[in-house]
Image 1 (cartoon, rainbow, N blue to C red):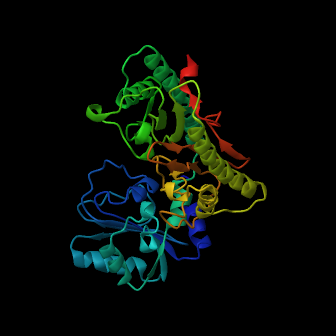
Image 2: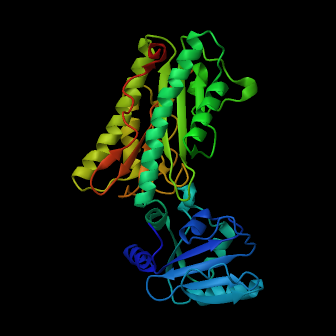
Image 3: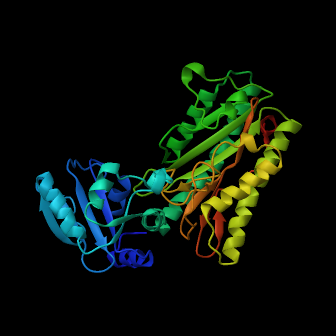
Length: 396
């Protein structure tokens, strides 16, 4: 949601607090910079604060050698040079307030939004205010997509989906021709497709075969990548976005088997993962249809219970999903009641992955879709989604 003072103050009031206090030092808080439209590459070397009260004019506290840092946002400007002036200015900013939100999370429950260091929290508390987490405010103003961002996601999801098919076809062609192909070779093939289609990501895609697929964040390296051979499972996890400002990511995971018939054990495990994925999605759909709000933790519980009920609970070792935005791991509500206790609600205009997995010694299975909660319906772009393990050698 773009920064509009009236909208921000409306949300602050809804939260039942007196203000939202932004703070940054040398880029420690990219969320603050993004919400306030500060150039992420700007050379800023001093601390600054920006207070948006629930009513009235905002206040800025900036260093005298960098007085320009908040010129583009509304409000009265206070200046400081030494640390004494900084503390005095902070007290002046906050003297009429009792409750303010900052970018921190109690017990670091949501690390993505816990950006303010402990010392700064101590400093702010000396003014007498009580500090609350800005987690819900951040979701409203850093995780809700614009229409242009939604269009960029739709393009990225559709393109990634086609690249999955191309990649499985590439593997089939190379293996059938008795040409040696490694996980790293396949990863590079995917990156070539990204480049050709105007996509890029913050890291190289995951291509994992055999036992390596049992490691959720395995990444092949040129000098130690496994050769892709017949009779093994291949897991592909790809995420990317368009090369333009404010584009957002798509992120999907598919699995295939290098053969013409998928072994019963592999397909059986996939169907359990698929069942967990679909149960979580149906929970989202049901909540939307009945106009109910649902927490990210509730979806994690649904997927995790499904896998536990099928005997693989100990093999599901990560959260069920994450928010997606300008960063592939965004700052909205995650689908998590395992790694963190995600109590934020899933709101309209946000996107998140659902990607349960089962990781065994011999192989691992993950199936990942991206869910966007629109005003009209719940969407999954990049169709069709996976319903069974792909027998790769049948693609010839």
